[in-house]
Length: 225
Image (cartoon, rainbow, N blue to C red):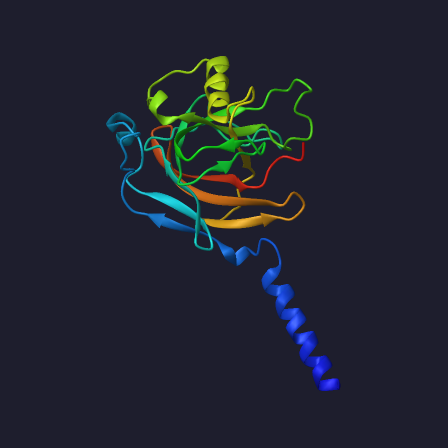
């Protein structure tokens, strides 16, 4: 009787262990050799990106494929604050995202499979976004066929183009979070928000000198609103 009870408890413990939602070991970042190859990505855009990228996986499922800009310039005079994290300018090309299957953005809006440029944007301080994220830093998604590396996006046009991606009146976006101090790519879980955050370290340029720039992106999970 005691043995059967013991075995039952062991089986229950194993079941709880492997059925627990969002285990960290399910997520991984792997190198992705080669530039993006697809007709939706122009030669001009391809030439502005790193020759290799990253793939974020959850088990056997591909969450997203990322390539970052080849000449990612950072502002040397920038000082981070708890609300403003990254030394990029509004509208700056940060990289490219490939979704192999339909996904969702940080606002839980449905995003079709496809290729999207990632451009830096700041969440407005207008009272309409309270509680969305503790930081203002975001990446908005633009249809890659509608974008070019040197294209200058006025803020309203940038937000409108990103809203078209989501098929709504709100831009499709990914949330940026404070980067961890690690030279290695990784994925971590923010248990308070149930966010999965991918940590990348990419080459950048600061005052003409090469530097390493961490970028931490919420790749799964969404705002509480």
